[in-house]
Image 1 (tube, rainbow over the protein chains, first blue to last red):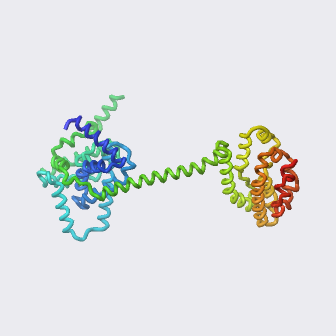
Image 2: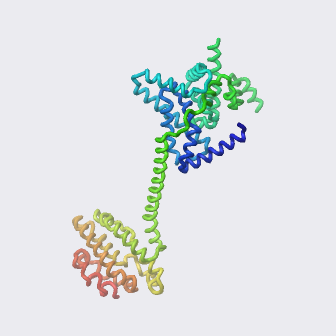
Image 3: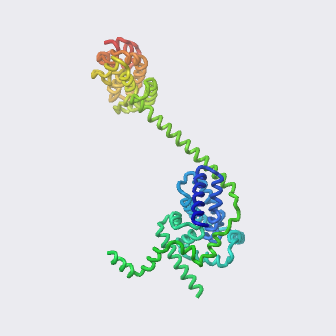
Amino acid sequence: MSDREVQIDLDGLDATLELAIKGDQSCFGDLWRALNPRLERFLYAQGAMGDPPASDVASETWLQVAKGLPGFKGNYADFRAWVYQIARNRMVDAVRARARRPIASMEISELEQRASLEDLAAGVADRSQLQSIIENIKKLPAAQSEVLMLRIVADLSVEETAKAMKKTPNAVRVLVHRALSSLREEIGDDQT
Amino acid sequence: MRRFFSLLRNAMPFSNAYQDVNTLAGDDLTTEPMFSQLRQFADAPPESGAIPIALLMEFNAAKRRVKGRKKYRFGAGALFATIVLVPSLAYAGVLPTPIGRVVANIVDAVSAPIQSILNAVSIPVELPSLSSKVESNAAADGAGPVAELSSEPTVSPAASPTEQSGGVASQEGPKGENGGAGIELAKSSDGASDDIRKEAGTKATSTPEATSTPEATSTPEATSTPEATSTPEATSTPEATSTPEATSTP
């Protein structure tokens, strides 16, 4: 896709966002279809591999978005950053709630994880490599792992990532740099 | 200076990291082979394109909530503007005189209990009377002698019948023997003022004698004696307050 097509697409999503803010239901559906797949994958990779289930957290995120959308101001890039900011908060809430009330039956949760991974990683050729890179990223400090997930899986720019994490763009760049250095060292150690 | 800082930067141990961060344009992540599987995972096509019904219901509920909130804010703002603006405009004389009188009556009816309470606790507070201001505005807007007479220096705020009785109440009600008498006195004086306003108000505004003659306000029989104000007979009898001999004749 050329830069011109990307620009047209973003302009179209800006207009879609404006209509959705005014109350157009179909435009809200378009926004959901444009953002939800990556959001679920981000939540899956950012959470403990489907625990809590990414689809549940994504649903809570979108409910919060639907509540706050009439008062939202900004363009599509701001909207994406806002959605992922809500998703981060809901994920933190879900992890805390899960820690307070652990699920008794582990077999069901394992089945859920497997089913979720099967659904989400349908187009991935080498799933074991995907699993290992996600686990390596999860070993990093929380901010570094989160910034990598937002930049790679959610496909946010540096500025959008900074808004979603409430940091400055330079802080995001530093976190990315440190995360890359740590990952290279760790993968090099594993290979040797 | 710039050379000094460049030498210092090269000498520092974190200089490489500093240069890497500044040259990091963000494209490393999109070309890094380490993340190829992760990018593939993120770019995978969505499994379903149907938005959940519960989400649409929540979206519609949020729309209704915002509309209701807008209506509520508009109504509250309009009510507040009405409460604040209408008496202000009436006081400034912008509103037409009949509307101003109606507003003045409402404001006096609202402020009378407060004034009676303040007088009962012996705090000598005189709330500004909107009705007198409206009357004076109407007189100023009117033609001829009324306007001239109402603007004469002999006309004081104490010249109106309502403020005569109010002044008596504030002078005599108070620090006397007991507070109960003060309450009775204030109530009776307020009742008298209302009666006086109803009966003699139109005459007082329409006739120059009623507002401008000092005799009408300073006669002891009409206003300043305790008998004339504290007893119901004295305030309600036409001889004491509302007769032309007592108030409007020179």
